[in-house]
Image (cartoon, rainbow, N blue to C red; front, side, top):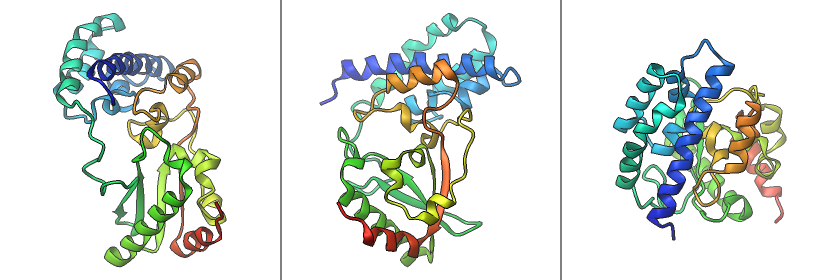
Length: 239
């Protein structure tokens, strides 16, 4: 069980990581302000769980008004107050059906089934339960086909850089991978999920690696394939 002490200790580490990334991104991309980097390229929104937390906008504004990261220290109590307000972390995400690691929405321009991913097996990795993944994928495709007439599966995630994830998808999916530049980062979990470990805390190894290189250990990749190809591939899987 996650204690409040551990939760807040992780929040402190994640706050400093967010600042380090923002300052580092500004150094690498001086055309972007520190505030914009904190808003769009750092771990801040992931830490807070939303960009609607009052401290989010204050932090982004302050990042543009100061030059020294140490000046941002004054906001740490506000960050911790917010984190206390969302403790304990809920085992089920409100956007997902209980116990499921996948949900979808519709890309209207193409009527794609856009797959969203979380780890509902925490603290275990859902990648260690192939039968669960197969069942989740089939469930999502069946539901999207039945309710919205979808016939194409799509997602954009760092997991597309992992062979352990790609094994669940057919050659069509892998042939359609778009190779996102690994130095590109956004504020979504499609980029930043790799900075979260199986306990829901900051993955300090990948965080340190990213700060050292400015390159994501696992690039976010987009991919798509037909439902038919996905289903046929799942039917051939043995585990």
